[in-house]
Amino acid sequence: MHIVRRTMERYVTLRDEDWHRIAPAWKEHAFSKGSHVCRVGEVEQRFYIVDSGVQRMSFPHDGEDLCVGFSYDHSWSGAYDSFVSRKPSRFDILAITDSVLWGIEHGALQELYSELPVMDRFGRLILEELIQGRATREIEQLSLSAEERYDRLVKRSPHLLQLVPQKDIASYLRMTPETFSRLRAKRS
Amino acid sequence: MLRVLRIIAEQVAEHDMDSLQLISDLRSTLEEQIARAQQIRALPAAQLLHRPAPEQWNTLEVFEHMNLSSGIYLRNLREVFDRKAVKLKFNAVFTPGRLGAYSVKSMTPRADGTIPLRMKTLGKFEPRKLDGASSGSIDRFVTMCEGFLALLERSEHTDLNAMKVASSLGPIVRFRAGDAFRFPVAHQVRHFRQIERVLRSAR
Image (cartoon, rainbow over all chains, first blue to last red):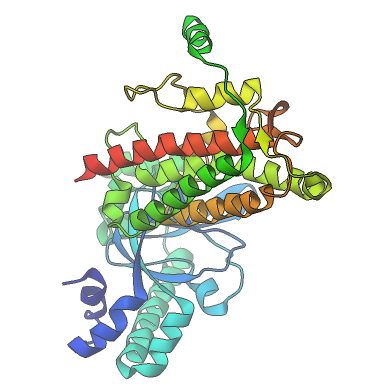
């Protein structure tokens, strides 16, 4: 089954006739390692589903890139807040490995939302999921120690440690690379 | 050094060209490249990302490399056209400059398919040291070729000898406008051969 359909069907059931209407709106995009899916200052044109590869979401601050998250197989990617607001992105989305993403453009998605109730429902469900994710992360950021944040990440996304440069994970966990490698050595 | 001397020695002086014929040849090459680029854009992403070897470019990176290098010529040509093109009369003859003739020659594969002068890519043309490459690189390549086509349209009413265009090495090395079209287009022909090789290796 098509990756987009399979991903959508985690949330809603699509009849074949719905899928035939939806499928042409999704296009495949390739990003070589080191290229940007979206850059600070650009308006995000698409909402993406990740077929393969890892992307890093970060924003520049005091000459550093502060990492706020990663997207990978079967998750969402792109600068979603810019996509919905149609305002310039405050985030960089960088392909840190060669990546294949399926994207839908803003106008096409709005059309599908208004034409198909099942699409509208899909849109609502992923938003609900995104909001829960944000809430969890806010609590973790403010209440957990560096060590606990590290343990949570290892438990939730162990494969990230293999795929992502250490400095990005350290930035994501809001610790120095030194603290990160000390923790890592301690745990293994 | 010896190799460079041999290339210069093997070079036959390039003759005067019929300007309209040159424009029409460049136009058809660019149109072929646009058509092929659009076909390639529709190929599966995994094929576009395929590298024949870890240190070699994938198809998208070859396109981005062409954007980086030909883009300089398009910008410089535009700038000179906007300043000078309307002030000049049409010249039916284009005479390649020495530097232009040499540069195009070194880009064009010999009859046996070998390349006269292999070059190491300069850092400023190496996508992997810059902003990488994506499907968008192919879209930008098409837009860039359309930019060249628009200037070729205007070339039918001006003089491709009289306008001088800074090369990608900077304003010290300048091409005649005709050569500033011929060189990037020849460079692209060479890289399209590479693209076909890379794509074949992905199957």
